[in-house]
Image (tube, rainbow, N blue to C red; front, top):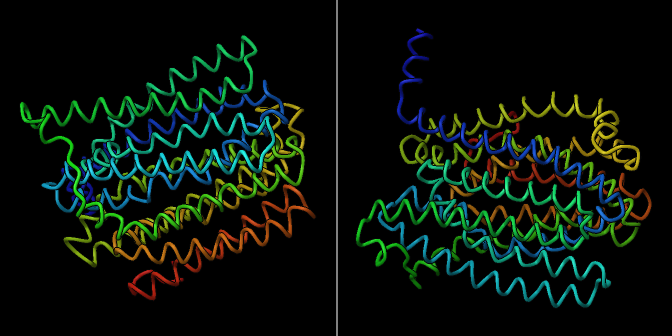
Length: 432
């Protein structure tokens, strides 16, 4: 009987489609993982803790504002594209237009705020990297590919951008380029990725629509814009709060302590974030499948969500233990003796990723159930707790204090999200 079930599953067209989707995403993450470990570590060793910390500070500062440019639309856009394919061009065009407007506003905000609070060195890097805020608009193409399980086009685009930027980073390192040059590469990578997404999107749509493509491929609707923003405004606020949660520790460290400390801390964070790529791939890939499962069978949908949470948890624990035990060895091999305290940070920080995986699933459920206001409530709770604890712990305990804050805020936020979703939907319980 088990054999028949396996054969039936493998022959199922839906399973084959999502398995292929996951395979493409996994391949992309593995390539990015390799380049991050090789080129990224080489760059960190070249720059040293202080300059690497300065670059990380600039990226974190921009990251707090840049999330607003996406307007929290991606998950909602995928949901609507899966539900009603006939509105595809109107949804894509409207989302793109909204994101372009948002990106212009965000870039202006970054320029004004950075000029008033940062020094000259930080300001130059921030103003360069701020230009990346324009490119989330082009990621509507990625939303379309996800809704159609055609993420191979996103992967192709990412491959091209990663390959070109990796070559340029090597050339820059060998020629001892300035710190500003590497900030420009951050922008250039987003630019190349956006060009790739646009190319594959228009190629797919022109093939589908034939001669009428130029007239129908891109539409903007005021009514659709209002509907999208009505659903996404809690996610805009939640996204801003989440960005603060993710970046506040590095911003506060960069202001209270030296850039050398921030460089060690950022090195540990980048290694800790790498392993999260693998389970996140699976979550992104199955999101459209969960939407369809919700449409067809409530019971089946609930079972799948609970199974995903269990799998995420079982995956996270052994990896966290292994990395925590071998953290000093990992940092010494990758970064060398200059990053002396990064090993201690990595051993602790790796545990903050465990609740993130569960939190990732709960956010998908909130989108599918259209209870996005809960995301805002959880994010607001988390950001308030995060900021309060960061200002208490970082001046006293430095990088360890920042990790303590992230740890407590992450776990409490996950518990709150599970409680709120269970109260609303009655199927996610604390027993998972």
